[in-house]
Length: 497
Image 1 (cartoon, rainbow, N blue to C red):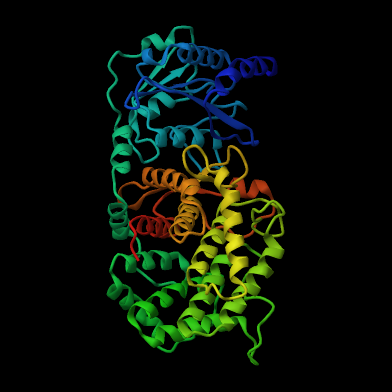
Image 2: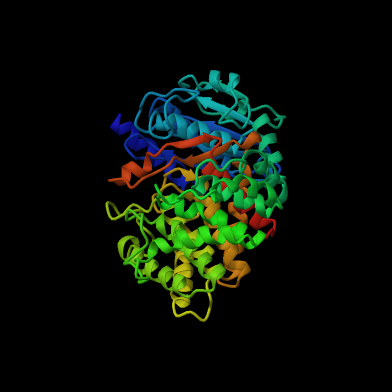
């Protein structure tokens, strides 16, 4: 098997060098690779050719050879776009379709191929050799909550592409992706707002970001009504956490939009957790737990407090806390480790600082001595994250780890941060707008009907190892965190204030 695996890899290498793609990671962390061969037109149908479902074998070599021959044709003669995955299961692990267990922690190869297939929405799948039940699964199931995709199971032998029908109709999955991509920012925002931003039972940023999005859509009275319970004199900080501090951003928005001083008082109380009884600044804001999340959880609420009250001490504390957190979690290369436990550059562990810096800069006075440090930190992080965006427009679950799954919420957060920076002149539009546009298409494609989201990383405390981050569950369902961040991105794209 090892000899055959080596032969197959050699056969695939020239094709992969053309237009490579990462499908995902195996159980042991090896990359599952694919390749794209363009058709004659942008509107050409898409055919996906899959081999090696039981491990590297003859089907892998045949798929690689057929794809290479197709690539050698003049582009004008390519009647369809071809996606080739020659070794879908490099380690020969058990496959199950539709996949069972937690993606991408259990049955990772099955989840990777199934979801990657769904989001790329081919019009026809051709499975060469042993199919591990994939043909039957495709015939009876919507793929990754996108839609059905027709499949043909063929013998692994030369000329298998000759079995492709002359006329290939658009698959249900393809039509669904087209529908999703046709939505305007306002349309997507309105769709998301039907599902997200209708409760505030927990005073955290999870429902909070969607509520801010609702206010940008003009639904201030509804958010005011949901938030009124927190004005009843209770101690909103009695069992506070970093998530609670960020939840107070809703009150900051309400204070600015309604002029209600009681909301401003709640913002001040949250920001005052950074000060001792004598009024002196503490070493840092509380509840940070040594996690990079705190750049978002604590600093923007300080900036809001400074803006609302006019008191400079809150901006002073924001600058102090940024410096404190960067000593803990900013890596020498400019990315953020999630915590000092490991250097892993977790996706939201970088998206939180990105969005936190962008929100803070929006409210931070330019004449403050700390402004330059915030601006430089923001610009440096944007420059570091930009080249790590995938060809599909997303940032990975571990942003600098090839093959890690492409994560939804961090992509929405980073792209929102970039767009805010472009519009405020903090970064260059020519460099960053194309990246925002790619991220927007990626988010559009990954928001389905009824608020179903594609590959949102589960709630994540600090982890001990890189593998712990790589195997965080990827949610394919409704998710308040992902929905709120997508709504923020959509309203930002729509230019809503």
